[in-house]
Length: 458
Length: 102
Image: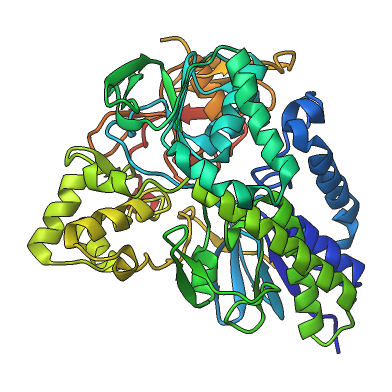
């Protein structure tokens, strides 16, 4: 039998480790990644001519970041690595790629999707103003370009990234005007038993809040976002919020980083026709997979945060595990003991991730309170009121039908940043559970392509 | 407003001068177009849906809120395109041209 063709999509923690496991088994995989350099978002690498050391870029995770980058660097001669390349469709056992103006189709025997995550967003009035960024985006600005997103930055939302990025900004010398945490305090105490599954990671999280305190950054807990205020031309000038006591306050700033933990990028799994199931813990639809990462479609494997938000450490293990599963399914020998150890590793992280999800819950209730004037779809400036009135006029309560009538989710981000919130708004308006609203179907191309695209010249 | 973004380090890099809407803008080698433009100004583009100026959102190629154009009409994602000295960038879409009708 000729060497099987295995394609790995993504070169973050799970993709890089999947590629490594394949090379160790004597296979030369194709590794396709949108980034200019490997590392994904969490271990994103700065441009070649930047000089900040690992400790400064990745803090407590510097050792793991370096190990991942070094391992991938060592693989380069043994893999077919295609950076700055988008997989925009999967159909008929082939992936469709675009890089610059060049398009290719590549058949595969096994496909390992390590597509990573983006920020999970709940709209707030004014989030369309210039100077509002996703929390992850604010971290990318610092990590890969050594800039702050503004002169005075407010960090708002919930999730482990909130305190991490705020403290990274303080350490880099940026001015942090405030941290506004929307998560209920009791939730964190309730989540402690699960968080204790990774005591070191829990301790690192606690240390971050101490660092912010020492820097005298005001931290407000249990807040409710009211509005990002500002001017349509000049952008953000402040954030209005309700404090735990119910009083409204405004904090002056020229930039806001906002996010509520993460959501997996599942469009490619959808195009590959994987089955999805509703996950009540995160109120998201996730592609189904077995303990080793096998999707419902033969030959397709899912790993890392692109399948479910379990963190970078878990992603390294699930990437390796998915690769071993693929190798074994192709009838090649694998080390069964290694697979057992990886399964145990992945399970340990699942407990911690469950703790994080319950400590920093998705603020579904904010959707009901979202004023009609607040924009839900940033791409096309469609408001909550527009969505609600379309529902009343047409009776559309299913996600894709409501999208067809209102255009919410049809813009150029394809629902990445409005889809989850729109589903909550529809559920409240229709008085049905959010799982009955369903999920937005993935559409090819998963991101806009240049118009002048053509086939690769032979 | 001078620049929206604030440089916090890595400022020893050689300068790169590109043109934005016909005006020279000095950036640093290794800057993305987004950082080049927002270190010099407040916004990147006009929302096509009437709600004002935009300055990008996700910085990881997912939201498509940072589109700018070259003078020849190519669309660029400012967060994932490096600034280069020869670039002539437009912050509004150039008029569509149809070569077959020329």
